[in-house]
Length: 432
Image 1 (cartoon, rainbow, N blue to C red):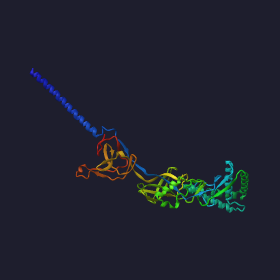
Image 2 (image 1 turned 135 degrees about the vertical axis):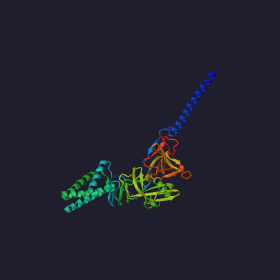
Image 3 (image 1 turned 30 degrees about the vertical axis):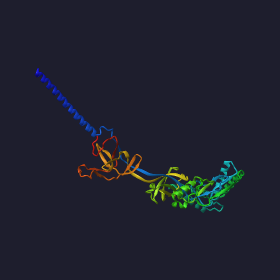
Image 4 (image 1 turned 180 degrees about the horizontal axis):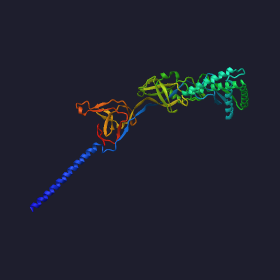
């Protein structure tokens, strides 16, 4: 009996030893799997990367300010209907008939027709046609047409639409002279004038009268005035201080005008705006900056003419001679000034890391994690712009152990920056 009992005990001990061996083997395999799985980022979500490309980002200074021009109001429209002879922004000469003012009639069609007749009569009368017209005059008119067309084409090609429009009437007069000379030496023009004058006389009976408004000076005509003309001294803009600006701007709130328009004597105009001293740092007098105006949704290159500091504020004055077609010269404007344009890699700011006191990002290169040095140039929202020519650096080189030194390149084009789905990143780590 004793022998059988010993055999049973021995069998039980052998079974236990086998179970323990199997358990130990499974435990070792489990630990090995855990370590490998952890090292290869198995417990993280799928690793997400972004490929690096060059981006251009404008650094903007958003502000609001006032447009100042050399303006002279034009009066003469009181109590009547105005018929303008020039488009907005068109250049006029001193003494030119800017408009006709008609009074006494509420019939809009009659007023419009009389205004049209007056404009045609004026055009024909100034075409310089008479009975002594010679063939040579026709040749001269033809040359003038060629010259005017070439000038207008040049203006259009450089975007100076105001100058092109300003030359339109002179071109029309040259065409009238040439066609009249070819047809009948001015006789047709005289008959047309007589017919138009007769029609105007019959219509004039319903009008209380008309008067001409002539330009007191040469310049660019605009058919509206807001009363703010002359509030800011055009010749003293570059000396204006922030406190003076605020005082004059508040005066604009109480301005009004019954003028029928204004003449801007010079093409040069200013946009003046106050900013903080910190915002003005880096802006250089004499340098050109792109200014985007919200009302017109236009961008104009303007020169920083002056920057005057007072009590922590700086008044900036930008100037330009460009007057693009369709630009809204409303007195008060919101604008964005392009301080500079930054070129670099756009990296999510959350991807930036600090390793051994060095800012950089982790990238995935094949199945290996690498650290790349990143020089941040500018931050915009959730992104940082990193310089494309960041110098390489050796990390941990300051200590005495050379075996842990890691040479890290700067972030490069087409690098795949790790932006999510990874934990406990480190240089030269293997990933699945």
